[in-house]
Image (cartoon, rainbow, N blue to C red; front, side, top):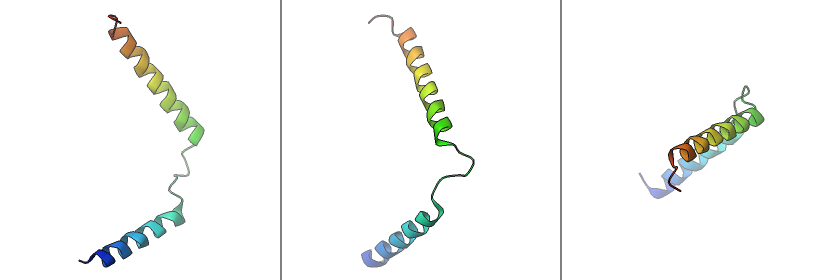
Length: 54
């Protein structure tokens, strides 16, 4: 397999991915972002509870 044919296949694969958009219809970005923020804040709170020596 040559470098040129590999690059051609990767370009074709990337072009096909752009047609579909990549987002699932049932995912709301605000809900996903809010849930990620809440989970990260919870992990930060748990970390600070266990790290009392600072």
